[in-house]
Amino acid sequence: MSTYNFDYLDELEAEAIHILREVAGQFEKPALLFSGGKDSITLVRLAEKAFRPGKFPFPLVHIDTGHNFEETIIYRDKMVERIGEKLIIGSVQESIDQGKVVEQTGKNASRNALQTVTLLDTIAKYGFDACIGGARRDEEKARAKERIFSVRDEFGQWDPKRQRPELWNIYNGKIHKGENIRVFPISNWTELDVWNYIRREKIELPSIYFSHERDCITRNGQLMAASPFLNMDDEDVVERKQVRFRTVGDMSCTAAVESEAFLIDDIIAEISASKISERGARMDDKVSEAAMEDRKKGGYF
Image 1 (cartoon, rainbow, N blue to C red):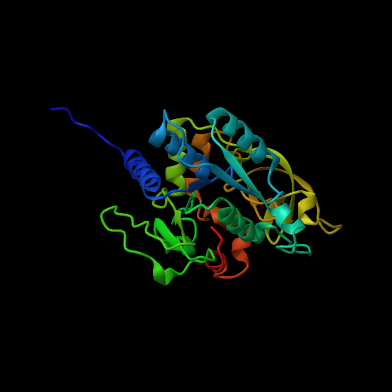
Image 2: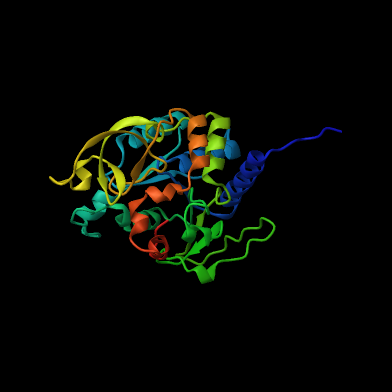
């Protein structure tokens, strides 16, 4: 009799593929939210394993703040061309131009929170009933509360009290008209799991994840990439630093870490020794103790 030896990455992969296939089976118009970050890139690889040689049963959706890292946008466009899947872009700038949101002002202004309106408008425009995302429970305490199938009401809002039990990997996707489900196939993964999977699968990533030289300023104790999106003034001192980014988001709220990690093995060793979570480098999570939970209740992913 043949025996099969699965390591923990095989188990995580199998669970994620099962979830993706459940989405395809239970929903009429799902979508995969793609940010150009390592977690959504991992989801694309998992979708390839779940559905190839066929096409994905959902498009990729990027909510573009207009203040993204250039490296991320270049990567996004090359990847979409390579895999031959449909990409839908929701533009925060269009939401601003249409008067649906008001751009923040001041030194710490960011477009990150404005994404919620653009996301909800995009969901309504295309009639998506499920949105797949790369959120993980280890990232932030509000995300640790959320189920793999997370119900959102007709306004896109999340209510922790409405969560459904998920026993024996059984996922309930039943929703009423206007509601949608947010789905997190890698919810049970950690940051290290993602990096070990990227190493095993030899997945290409945007260059900003690896150590490089960049002009930075120090703001609120964090190293931020020097950019006109930061509303810089004469008090901001630009310094050349050797940095990398642990998470990818809007340039106005995503901080870098000083690092000499040029290779994936170096990054894995660095993360293993770190006592700060990857979202410790996200300024938008520091607004209040419940910043993420408040945004999720308002419709944020």
